[in-house]
Length: 609
Image 1: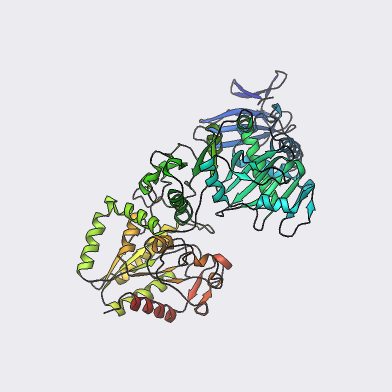
Image 2: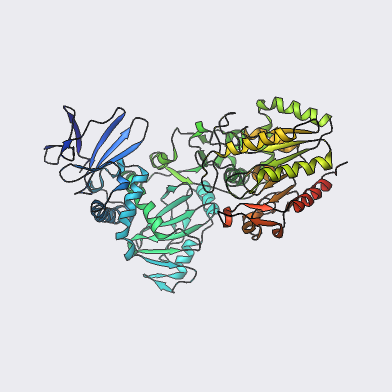
């Protein structure tokens, strides 16, 4: 079985049926208009019959889908807006298709690939996940879910102790096994001999599923998520069993991602898993655009490479894969320049994340995301040293030299908009500058905000987390800079802005400053992890009330080597603002408490004299 062929004749679109007949594709009885310029069709997918999908693609990579009924009449030009009764029919068919896919590709030790799934791999990831969402409803009722922390002694024929051993993984230790010894091994859920992972299956940017198999279980899957260094869930499809540790992804989400991946890659999965299997090369993937968040690039990706460079012999270091390199995925500089140990081991295939799985299977790679959580002094020095080589900093160096000659202290004020920030940020900053000016007399204020990602182009920025805003955050930051310049810039106060500048510029000016004042957030990756500045931090009540949460990552020695002092505003001096609550809440602060916190830093960093 393959896609039904699309034929164009006399400005009409025709579909060639299995028996060879040509049927006009129509819209409410009228022949459908020819495709617009730039669009072409891969054909018509008929595995969901009596609903058919026309698979369309644009020369620039966009995808689109039309839904047809049995007469080849167009029902919808948007797959995701399908309405009853067609949606009910599509759901029934999706349940049948993905049920067969589960039993033929996901469950067996060796996938059984036939004609039934031809054409599914022409759909993009979004469409496959949407269809899998419909199809998973047929599988969920038959699966037993168990939390291994409080499960029964025996479930679905498996002993709880064996399931716990399978899930008790230190991923970084297992990745080092792959790098040095060629295999990632885990305890078998049936209590048999240990099993070696066959594949690292990319589900999403921060979700990977490792596939194992043995005679007793068939295939089974261990799932990792987020920035953690362990596995969170175990799925044994042949036994219809899902066992999980705390914080695991919901079964439904795991199944949807696994089924969509199998639909997209079933041919490659069969090819890679068919004997004789070739040894795989360990390949460590790092964050890529558009998922380049400077905090996590530094905290997870670069700390991982730093750890590997110190713990693995140079001749055994793995390949490092950078996707979307032309979009400056390497936020702090090319990996070989930060880590000469990886010279000759970095590849930059010209593909995006959606193509990563195909690249992995086609090149016989074992996928890893080796991530750490500790910024060493050596990593700090490597990043700052490379940033200092940026020739674009010549003008900044001259300004810094003049300020130093004048004896002006520099203080960094971090800007933050969108969430977890001050309700009246301009008023807050005005108060801070007035207080600094009163204490120091003359000074330089560095206003630091979002950085450019590509060159010095401020319209290219790095990723941020949290609720979306109505306009780019850069606009809000620039308004603040202009307002503060208009109000304060004089002989006594020099305003320096790094908003929209390269990261190297922020790091340069951070090193010129005595301390910083800023809301808690990813910018502290620059101020603390790299520049290691003393600082005064403000945040909302939710975060301040949980000091053992992520709030400690910028000052606890567990996460950074040799931290300088970091002062937080006291909880009783903060009031959350109306609107978004909890982790993302904005807030207001008691200005007297801010002044007192700044005074502590002034005295700790040399005083105001």
